[in-house]
Length: 583
Image (cartoon, rainbow, N blue to C red; front, side):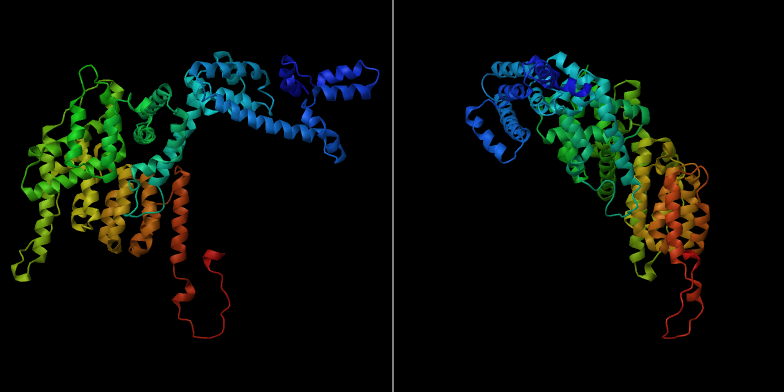
């Protein structure tokens, strides 16, 4: 066929006879058998040592094709080894000259499946494949597919669109993987989104594939960063910031200095990575991080855009926020004000830079966001007063009854707290982490006191997936409280259900929580929740699926009519009655 002809076309150029030549020989000859024998002799394996083996193999009925094939395979293996050896020996210019000559000779056979691996191997070892050859490879889908990644890199670096097509499905997969973890049906306070260490995360399939595609190629690395910036701007999805940091640290793990030394964020990211591993920013590392921020020189402010993206990674924000809460508790014990703690101010500075990443990259105005004085002079002292309220209440509860004051837990929230959560992004982030902290401590009083402040927060942060993922996990520690209708009303009616109808993700998180805790919930409340959470026509597949799972679970938990009426104790097997569920 035409495909075959194209495949073997290169042989003629190299002076090797092919099927066409045989056809011509047979058409123009008088004795076909003699002609065939001569063609075989001329084009067979011309090694004297093997000539004598042929009649012997013929006696055994071994087809010539099989013999030629095995000799060919052996030779190809040797040739591949030789090519790889040439790529390592002698002077650089000489070895590449040899490989280029070899490529020139063999490229016409690149479509032959048996020879293709050799041609590909030659190209793989050439740091610069001739432009003409790259274009031919690029134009042919099958050849492009068969190429080694080393050759593809040379194609990609001048073809951003083609590289984008390769990278795009990986980025989609990455975001999907993150969302699957946030919405996972396994809810636990021990294992959550932030549990895996940075090193474990970098072993993920997408990071590994991207690392391999980039190799040591700075141009490709820059392209990936550009894709991530563009997607972050377009979607505001913070997982792209995580990938930005993971990719850099993956190249760091492989000691790819060609890239690490030219990325101005490398040392900052490396230091922050160690903090994320410990889930805490200690004083020594805080000084180091501050040094990097203070060291941004005039004219190089653009690096702030990259640093802000590194700090916007949810794993970085989680670490900074947890460290902030710990610092505030320490300050209460030391009787120190927030404005007097340089470590705390640095944490706020980094939180502020991270939270401002989108605005900075969008506006292209590279300067650190101004910190609002009230955050430090009013909001943080307010949080510290909550810590003090808890201490006071706990101590009072431990006193012997005659010394107990008529103290009840404060139930109102200062209006300023609610206002801060609505209007100030950093205050809101820290406030939410404080609420996660008290939930983890099983501090029901403090939780119920502050919960109403979550209904309206800065850009709905309290209804973001990461917060709800962490909150649902921590609420499993308060599982016994779900038996109390009052607790359920505050949590569900007062908080979750206020957003369920307008936010699909909240609907999903409530269903996740109930799937996990339905057996703990007050029965009357459970029934009304089942009604309230019924999917609407607009609901997505995920909500419907979760709702069906919950309904099935609740159906299984209902006592069957047979159990309710007292059954006479008989040793005889009862006939099976179909229950409504099994009909």
